[in-house]
Image (cartoon, rainbow, N blue to C red; front, side):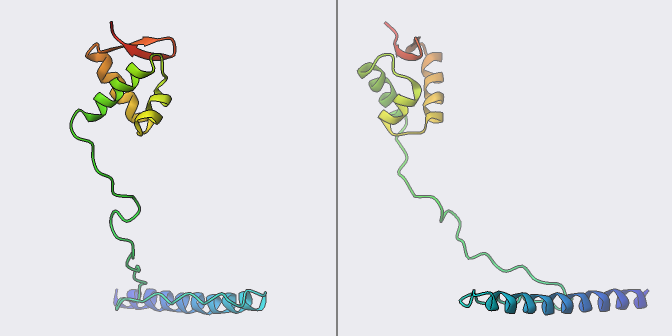
Length: 130
């Protein structure tokens, strides 16, 4: 059994060497093709077992999205009702633009307002229930 493991290890190590050599050749070919400013990629670290390790991510959690302040409870609902009152028959996309939220959020707000019987459908838009 140890002979099999040693043979597998030697095979993997030789393949890694081949891949590294091929990478070097390809990087040299790129520089000769006029891509002189291309820097060779850093070599991946190899663990004690001979397997490549994954590089640590430099991205921090939440770094992609802007931090925005959450609306207080019921604030969006009131904004929706005020927008509908100001422009009866407005479509959800128009309402979303008016109150500054995504159309999907307006759809949820509309569904809740309809369930509470605060608004009714008017053509392709909505209006306050009389």
